[in-house]
Image (cartoon, rainbow, N blue to C red; front, side):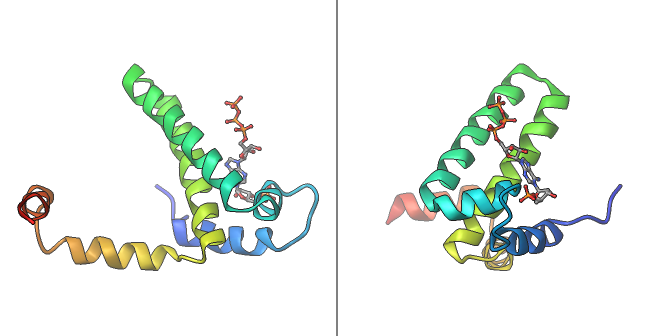
Length: 107
Ligand SMILES: N=c1c2ncn([C@@H]3O[C@H](COP(=O)(O)OP(=O)(O)OP(=O)(O)O)[C@@H](O)[C@H]3O)c2ncn1[C@@H]1O[C@H](COP(=O)(O)O)[C@@H](O)[C@H]1O
């Protein structure tokens, strides 16, 4: 069990993104812009899917960490915060996913 949260990593990423440190992967992605960061996010998503399909728990953990890190970098560059996403997820707790999909299919 750990106390480390996505909000903690989000704060680290925000600082590192603007650090200008040549050793920082976060700064490198930030300087390249949203397309490069989004491309890395997509690659890590695919690697997570492959790990899941293989049933490789160790790889699922490692690829999920890569995925969440790159997701946070994309959010940072886009100027969207995790609390915006959490507010949307909280809003969705009011009804089930299948009910939500059914309401969209009717409209
Ligand atoms: N959590 C991460 C994190 N996860 C992944 N990565 C980097 O993301 C890059 C992924 O690149 P690649 O796709 O080439 O790597 P890969 O997928 O492992 O390689 P392949 O499987 O494709 O061969 C690597 O350089 C990883 O080191 C991360 N870089 C940084 N962080 C966090 O961000 C903080 C700041 O990092 P810097 O900005 O680098 O100082 C760190 O202290 C960490 O807390």
